[in-house]
Length: 112
Image (spheres, one colour):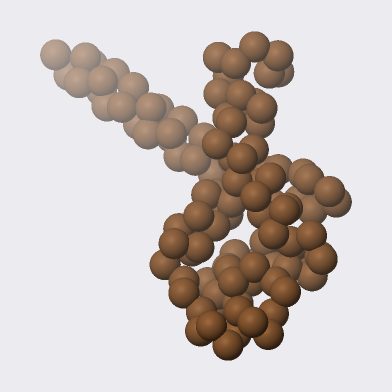
């Protein structure tokens, strides 16, 4: 009985460790010379929904409004230096929604 409990505890600890290891491995997206984390791109949509800059700020800036958000992840900030920031953010968000293209899902064909 004691060895069975130890075995179950060890198995549970192994599962927890695997989940933690998997969550620490960040998926990176490379696009037009920029390298960003998948998690940052997923946060981008949330930031866009919650951030409504003043109309004056929008009129003065050619950058997407999210570039002025104080919580914009640091790996996305260099995208704001590009004149094509809006189209780059759009492409990144589309890629983030297609996990097979990113090979996040091991069940997708073509992923190694």
